[in-house]
Amino acid sequence: SQELEQSPQSLIVQEGKNLTINCTSSKTLYGLYWYKQKYGEGLIFLMMLQKGGEEKSHEKITAKLDEKKQQSSLHITASQPSHAGIYLCGADVGAAGNKLTFGGGTRVLVKP
Amino acid sequence: NAGVMQNPRHLVRRRGQEARLRCSPMKGHSHVYWYRQLPEEGLKFMVYLQKENIIDESGMPKERFSAEFPKEGPSILRIQQVVRGDSAAYFCASSRGTNTEAFFGQGTRLTVV
Image (tube, rainbow over all chains, first blue to last red; front, top):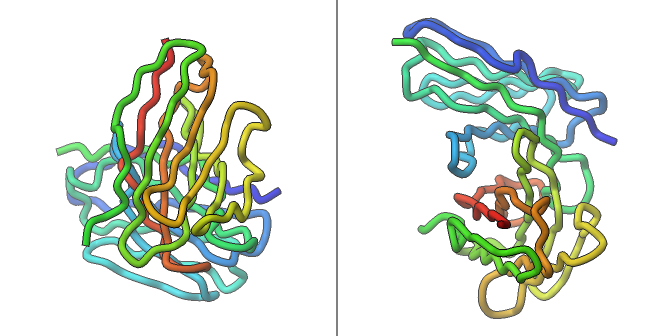
């Protein structure tokens, strides 16, 4: 079965510093999704990556998918308190539809 | 364009009762997915539906759980004879098609007492 490992499990950064979260798959990914979840709330869609070597950015968040399509990273530049939350990567296992397998999540805390 | 709408946001049921969770996908989306997030665990896929069809229910418990997505109206996840272990957050997602962006609702938090 598809396994997704996220690292680190948790992260505390000083406001203004950069941070990186990694997501590693045991198999080739057909699609990789990044979401953000705040405690007690739903998932906010951040980005979707499908092609090897693809990179997307939105505001201060950049996501990359490696050439082999087995590893993705999420990078936040100059973090702010609003970036705090749980970041989840989800992988499209290639079956019909968007049946996603999720990593365990990375809990991010930004210290003012 | 409203996002994925789930209701209720919170649901309390006594053991043995039925729970009905509703999900209205985003406008233009015909693919619906249900996920469950147990306390201190990750999100797990339950079922994938298109209008009037169950496409993949490999993540659904064999008993007491059922899902539908009728031609008209929201998708429904039904849990019969709830037990305490069913307490979790249930999320619905929708997409326009396969291998496209999937958007999640706010979830329904089910508490079984």
